[in-house]
Structures are given as structure tokens and as C-alpha cells.
View (cartoon, one colour):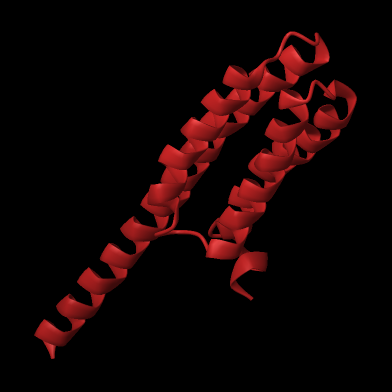
Length: 125
């Protein structure tokens, strides 16, 4: 009986540690991605962005999404891929006004997506 209680408490503690780590890790990855999108947004706003700037953000995102596939559904990751590809294509064609709209959506996704996976009451029920 004591052994079963100890095993149960150990399992609960491990699950709690996993949830805390996941929340921290996903938040950190999206914070770094948000910062990169913010810099790209400012360059697009100044109309100084070029293909390499978009490619740098895409490369950063590709390195992050390899690990985020463990924690997030593939649909959420492909959603970011879609908006980032749209923005990079517009930057490449120097259509800065349209790219600003796509980057604004990306900033909003990067800001709000981690909240959907936080250990909060409304996410549990």
C-alpha cells in the first residue's frame, strides 16, 4: 500500500515537472521567434527588408519547429509555415504593404499560440 502511494506521488510529480518544462520550453521558442518576426516587421516597415532577412527568419523557424513537433499539433506548426511563406514571398517581390499584414498575423500567432498549451483551467476543461 505504501509502495503504491509512493509510485503514484512520483508519477504525479514527474507529470507536473513535464508540464512545467513543456510550458517553459514552448514559451521560450515562440518568444525567440516573435522577436525575429518583430525585427523583420520593422525592416519591412522601413522597406529595407530583403530576401535574406525573410530567409533568416524562415531558417530560425525551421530549426525551432523540428523540436516543437513533439509538443504541438502539426496543424498549428503548418499554420505558422503558411503565413511565414506568404510573408517571405511578398518580401521577395517587394510588396511591403501586403507583407506587413502577413507579419502582423505571424506576430499574433507567436504571441497567442503558446497560451493555448499552458496549464490553465480553461485549457484543461
